[in-house]
Length: 275
Image (cartoon, rainbow, N blue to C red; front, side, top):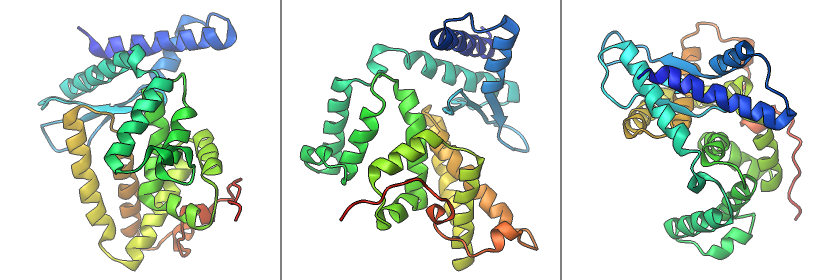
């Protein structure tokens, strides 16, 4: 079974369905549809001098999966990564993976129990549970994979300290959610997050290396569990980008300025919370 071709075919057909649903047309010639699907599925081999090999596959929307098995050949790692991605893609279509009122209620109850807080917090947008409730409700009718793609952005902003900085500057949670949900994760955001870590490295030499080791271990463990990897992989990539800058003899102008929190370098169309 050519699982790589199956994964490609699955997303090609999904692109056709989405195109028909949005425009009412046929989605264009078959060649154009195939090219779009091919360009949206990205395979990336982890650098290694020899086996075992690791391969990551990024799906349309940004979800990332890796090979679960120990692979002695690069082609084998690619096929196994595609298999994991295909299984998760198919499972994501099940009714139980659709975000609805019942799913939100169960998720909030589980979160409240795990964090030892009251369910009343879900009604307060100023609490963590209230923020989680806002995020879930904004994705009603969509799938868990789509929700996870959006959550990755906020996980990175929390990990990097940006959300804390925005909260200290009294930006409302609703405006932050609205802004970053629409923006998504792009190269500019990655560079901004890497710049923050370079600033931490300048204040505390060795900080990036330590954090990168932790992120790499998390990525390995997550891949072996067969779960969605984008948050772990993005952390590794951002820290690697920041670390590469520390080896440049003369720091570029963009990195020579005193780094500050990400939100201070961007003019965000956010609204401050009222007192």
